[in-house]
Length: 390
Length: 192
Ligand SMILES: [Zn+2]
Image 1 (cartoon, rainbow over the protein chains, first blue to last red):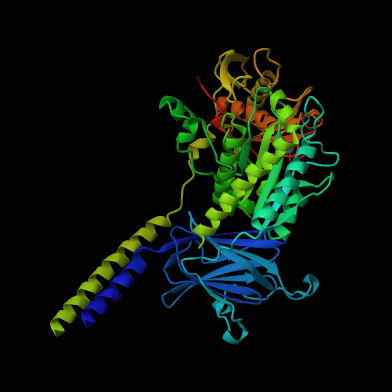
Image 2 (image 1 turned 90 degrees about the vertical axis):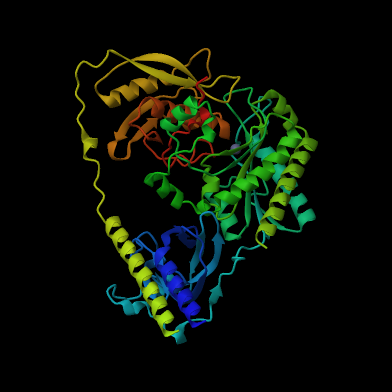
């Protein structure tokens, strides 16, 4: 019995050494909050201990890091991250420039990420004095138990994902920004507002979920303000509604977009051609450093997988309704989606530049049906999201 | 019993020693500095470049959402930036049988190339925003018509950034972010 225990202990020690977890850390200041992401090459269990101007992420695994000390230069709120190994425990200590608190934290899969959104706390910024901590002193990492709040979380298999409670609907354009124009002078901004209001009413009445609109009237709202409304209201989903227009007058059909910035190159294109495959079937090149920088700049980065799922659900409903060629789900760097800190999609309901679809867009019952279809897509996503997180 | 215990301990210690050795050797090899490829800065010789350069320009048609190629010849130049300018002037000309997804009166004001990033910066006149017909697809058609054609024909260009009258803009008509540079998206291209 003793032998088995010893053997197990030995094996544990070996696996701890042999399969270290590799963690990459990135952080960025967004509108009203700072996000720090710990991305692992495998999943891990963790504990969080937080106090006024620092928090600890404790992992019961050996962790491999590139640097044990990271000075964060691009943040108003965060100062540095220090890594230490304690008795069979790997600890990241995150230090703020002043007081901060964890507004929320959640776990995302594929790749496994623990995401923290932090906000300033305590006195007004003018009163804050940055912590004077010598970088050489490892004692900075010793948290004094009595100062520490009881704010300890244990990450179980369920993670900390929350259910969907608020949806932000964004009717595109407005005011002096007409959006695209039809031949009959039909304006994109009017259709998006009608569809947005209908959708709000259906979602509220059937799902009992809080819905906020980025504009309720024919007013001009900047792209930055639209996404700030969603972020500040802590929306769990962002749906931007637009009407499409193309240089090709024959173009028609609904399209749902989510943000993605995949790098593509000629080599993969040539490969696709040689193998007689579509370009989408070919593995594209790994993201370049420049592209990673753009991705890390986006609040949306952490939600791309969920956004793509949401886009799938909505697009399938719209395809059934419109009975047109499946233009499908697409990826493009939409400005309004990039800074959304939640699953976010942009729907182009139809082409105003196509004579047939422009006529349809003048029909209120058609707009009703568009609202119904988007609602069906949303409710299927909510079911998927809630069951996946249970 | 005691012997067994000693054997087990010895076995564990041995395995632990071996794994530690492997990890040590692995970590040593991983800290070796990466050497940049020094051959990148080779100066191109300018020995009689061909008078005409063969290029493929991809165009949209009314029937297809994909761009299809046409072969053209462009007057060559040993000065790359001059060549890019000629190429862009060629692609922004109206073509009868194809759709050129450009606003009326579009003109390239200036351009420059940042070698370290393989980035080509194109500065267009204000007509890009003032006379653009709006719509997401229109924006995407314009952006990738320019970006895909340049990157496809000039492999030293990996990214393209747009300026309008020398200024950065958020979007052309309220949709696609143009503050960041674009990589090509060859999903818009079809050879056949
Ligand atoms: Zn629009």
